[in-house]
Length: 71
Image (cartoon, rainbow, N blue to C red):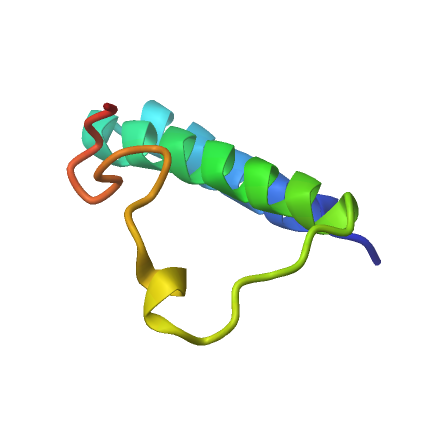
């Protein structure tokens, strides 16, 4: 099945948010899409995934995605 479906789902959700006056949600979904695409690309390149350790919970390279703010 591949991984593209999740990007399509996020795009559909973002379109819904845009069309229904939910700009903060639309922005957050844009950030979510960027994160998903980066993680999928890394996974497809064969890079090892983080083990379930404290290091796997380190700061996101995309900033604080909860607020929608970028570094």
